[in-house]
Length: 86
Image (cartoon, rainbow, N blue to C red; front, side, top):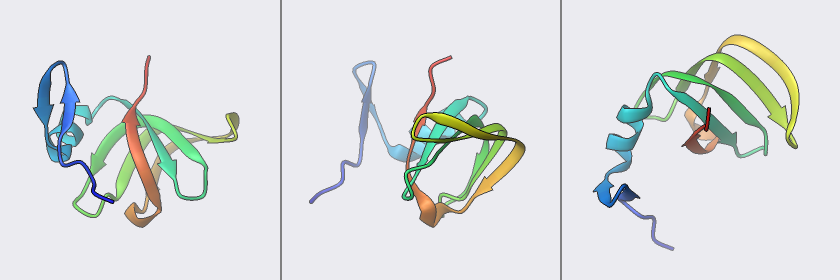
């Protein structure tokens, strides 16, 4: 199975790295391998996909389970990251 190396946005293609740089400071959803997802403001991330979020909310099965000020998510637990509609 091949993994796409570019993403289509507004008829312009960009690399995943460009996409991630563009969404720093914006609301995101981080889905984990466990099925949980975390929603918050992306404060930073590194080359290992370690993620720091602010104003974080933890969801399981679509239900809010907890709220955190800041959260750190280890990259090997991340299934995907996407922008969150406001």
